[in-house]
Every structure is written in structure tokens, then in C-alpha cells.
Amino acid sequence: MGKRAGDRPGAGAGAAAQQKRARRHQSRSSRFKNPQNSFDISPGMKGFFATCTRGRERSSAAEAIDLLESYAARLYPGLEEEVAAAEAEPEPEPGAESGDIEAEIAREVAEMKSASKPALFRYLPTTIECLIYIKCHRRIDPGRLVQFMFADLVETRQRRTRFTGRLVPAQVTTTSKVDAIVKAAKAVAHDLLADDAAPTTFALVVNIRYCDDIKRDDVIPAVAAPLDAKHKVDLKHAKHTIVIEIFKSMATVGLVQDYNALRRLNLQTLFDEPRPEALKPPSEPTA
Image 1 (cartoon, rainbow, N blue to C red):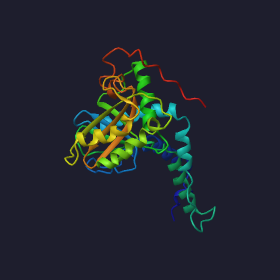
Image 2: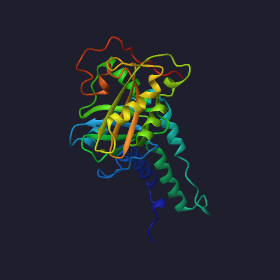
Image 3: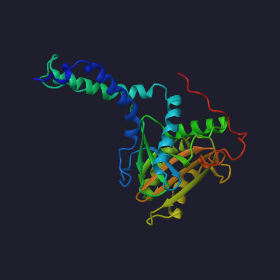
Image 4: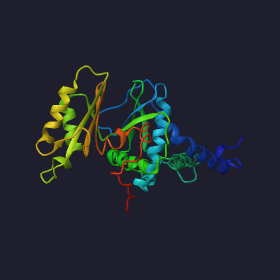
């Protein structure tokens, strides 16, 4: 009778090699689990909405995720390890004894999964040409990450993408209904609507694609109304900009500081002009 897998010489080395292969390939493959023609974006998600070169949606998603991962590692040190540890607890097999070969193999598989890199970001197709959505882990604040990333890119002047255009935060993803968008805008602009908020300037950016049920003239007055009472509209030099992207039945809402100074968060044009003097380099997070 032939030897079982766990009894063969070199089985341990084979498992180690499998773990290495899993670590190498899991991160990239887990980013692209959804077919290109699927639409799995739903209310309650958060992440990033981006424009890209036609026909390069997947390439854009890959380079954008690489960029986001590098800055998330700086802004959220240790998060990847914490997420991996939380996902690493395998469920024990009922009735399995410590010497059982099947149980040992199951443990090796669980260890291989836990050793692989967790996916903090995942590409979700919009099924619209030139538009992509990247979902992020719930512990990541898309607005904070975008602000940190673009401030650093402006300072370092290092172009790291080829196919991605505007990359805006989707701090709230909701339905393309006016009342839902207003609620989302109030949530992202919570600090600006606080009773003790200092007067400042604001602007709204609203883009609508493949959605005939809603108009900009429906959205802008409704979203601006709560802010008008305390703050002043400034379309050119607003300190705070609420960016609303409406596509099909969904809408994303994000709050950005110095939106125009950051070239409207466009990775293609960000480096075309000198660094804005008004922007300061980002500070690294403190422990």
C-alpha cells in the first residue's frame, strides 16, 4: 500500500513551498475575485472611486491598489498583521485527534491561508468603461488615506501610476437617491456641521454617469443647505470639498481638503504643475 501524503519524505518541505506560493499569489488574486461584468458594489461599503484609461480598468485597479497599500502601511502600521491574525484562527475539526493525518493536513492548510497576505483593498468592477471602484477594509478611512497620500505625492513628485486618473475617497457608498446622498454628505461633513465648527469655505463636486433618475440641480441645493447656514461657498479655493460620484444605482460621497490645490485628485495631472506652496508635507502617524 502506498504511503499517505503526510507520511512521504519531504512532505514538510512541500508544505513550506506551498505556503510561499500562497503568499506570493494570494494578495494579487484576492484583489480580482469578481468577474469584470459583475456588479457587486452595494450601500454600506467604503473605498475609492477612480477614473482610468479606457480598456485598462484592471491595470488601473492593480496600480491603484499597489499605491494605496504602500501608503496604508505608513498610515496604519500594523493593521495588515492585525487583520491577518484575526483571520488566522482555524476552526477545530470535530472529533479529530492530534495524531490524525487528516487533521494534520487540515491544520497545514489553515496555516497556509493565515500566512497569506490579507486583502485590505479589493477591486470591484463598475461595469462602466473608464470607471473603477476599490473597496477597502472597514478600519481604513478613505478620506484620511487619500489626503495623506496626495500630500506626500505633491511633495515627493514621484509618479507611480500610468492608467489611473482621478482617485477620490468613497467614505460612504449609498444609493443614487437624493435623500440617501444628503444623509451620506451629512455623515462625512459631520465636523463641519457641529455647533462649535469654525466658519470655513466649501464646495460641491457632483458627477453623474449612467443614471437618468437624478439631476445635479436636485443634489446640489439639498446637500449645500445644511452647510450654507455656517460656511461660505468658494468654488475656486474651498478648504473643504464634498465629492459626489453617481453611477447607475449607486453614489459615493467623500470629503477632501484642498481639492483644487491637489489638482482635483488627478494622478495624471498632479505633476504637471509646480508644487502648491500652500500645501505642507504630510506628517507620519505617531504611535
